[in-house]
Image: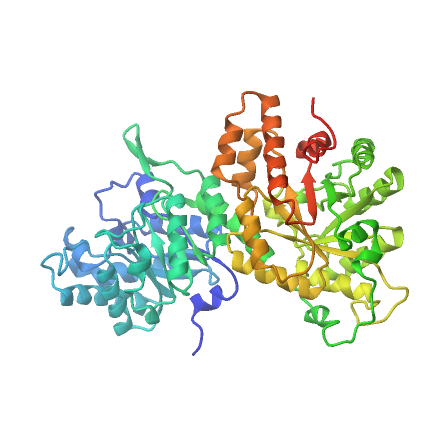
Length: 617
């Protein structure tokens, strides 16, 4: 069966829809007791302008202004005879407002009638009303249907059946639930969704009624109940009355943060409902698009990944033969590393001093990130070689696929070995739109799995073109892993793929929840590479809050946030952060190969204090 436009787009990326129509009309002075759908006839210029604003914000689809354009609702305004005209005009306006790359969703909401068995409105009349509206939308040429804001699963079932009887358009079917994830009559959302004729819909989801936080909980239930793509359209929080006007309080940045969480959890269609405006959608697009591109990054040259799979690789040196750090890992000795971020300029004095402190304290290696959070800093390779030459301590150089194409990555790995570096950590990298240069171009020829395979092949003396060279490269190959990933199944699958590609050790994201780490280690107990636990000592409550809310993939338990919140002053906050980090080390020390401690705000003294190698005064 041929894919429809919605399924085709879903196969390519996560989809971002538009936001509220009613909120925008209200902000333009349209009274709330007006018939918003009738404005398709009396003020098409205004409707088109709103559509255009959502298109400019980056929406993949816009909904027709037809949420209430059924005969039951229109009858209250004496417009029941204009169902076809209003719906047809709505589609025409949307088409005029959007380029061909933006899909048009025909929107239809509930009838707001007390239907049987809850009231006296006959089910056949319900079906006829939906057939009339949906037929008009289909004939006018919408790309797919979105049946939304249904409080009764029974009514949504009828709407789906009506749609199927008049057209073959793809359908997104959405319920609305309360903060307890229950429908109007107390049915939990995961149970309610299973009463729908799922074979007739492309996606299911939730919209309206609640803000993004409550909707995140609903997403978890839906993902457990169905394998259909899930759509979410939260309100911008709960409305409050301010100076006689109802105002939704969620900022665009707040909505964008939750859009990222929706995506990370597994939502495939994300949009907004009441209170969301173009600026909300713009920020949501910016946040989710960047993550989606990084997660789905695939090499543009499949042959790169196939090198070494079908070729018999020459023998390579073992982990323990490649570096002092590798030898210690291979011999099951506990390792310690400290993360030091390269400077923004060219003065390496401070980084030398920090590295020398670590070397004197007996730290095994310095971790050097590659443009963390998509920032622009001195080359990590340059910083690494200068540290090794000056301070006599090994480094682990992070290399990400964001900034280099596959040719550049190979050149850098050959260069790293030639100059004397021996330890690398392959990461996909944070997308530019998360950082200081959102308009920078991301490459992502290779994700971390592809980079691991490329480096493994170089270790075997085979380059991108399957050409042999000698002498071979001898780099230890590390990878990142996130035990607290929202989608743990996917994280484990990628972790196993990294090992299959040639990863020799792993360093976790900062872990704050022992149970998360232990669960991950148990699930992956058959994976025989050393795992180094990432440790981040908080320096303040603000630092903890930022990590919890702004760093993708990091989960900070509420009890730890409360401990940091309770610190009496800055010094107490630093001490509390060190204590929390030490407790994590003590609790998981026998389960991991060592610890990679971050130096918050470049304070190496804090990192060394966590490792018990110095005191903070």
